Image (cartoon, rainbow, N blue to C red; front, side):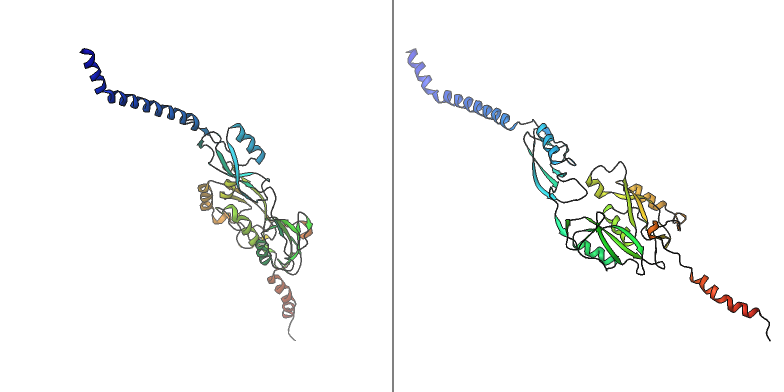
Length: 315
């Protein structure tokens, strides 16, 4: 009788027993799947992305392999001032946390330079020549002045020290040096105030004033090419001048920084007395020009004979 009752109770609650077993099995399955997923995705295990910018493509690949990440080239640009294959940009940025074997997307400086055809700018004015060179994806290089009656008229063009024949294929963004005429009666220009001027406008501003860029010096805030593009002028040698007081072709040295407050402060502190009239700057010997006498002196010399006649007694 007791056994019969036990069997009845057991059959009565069999579904509860199987429900408990099913819940336990489901919970165990979820835990197992979670553990497996965590292992596959390495949940919580990330790596710090190294800084690949300014490295060559070969160096970047070595660093990526060492740090268990991969690199993928997604874009390239051509900047002649930088090494071929140099990494310019990366995504994600340096310092980001990523999982193992993550692809880091990079932009590099083109391994093969883009070629363009050199235009013929001989006979044009400096302004027209600059415009034509920019249209051809080229830049004005050094301005070399020689005596001639037509100031700033292009008399020759050269590339890397050699005469440049129009139509020649050269790398895009190359600098083309120009030989320009310089008249003794029109050979002076002014040094503009370049303080706070951004890097990308420096060369065109000097060319506009018929001046050369001798050197650019960066302070410690400028570390990468991106920093260079964002830098501004905080000092210049020689300083700004009043009016036309330096010869065309004078070289200017510029100092650049990312500290725009410093550049702005130096500009505000620039007083009138600092704007000097500097006529000691001269061109190299082969481009020195004969000084022209002021008109006032010439008129005085012409007037002297007449003055002598006035001193003679009247008859």
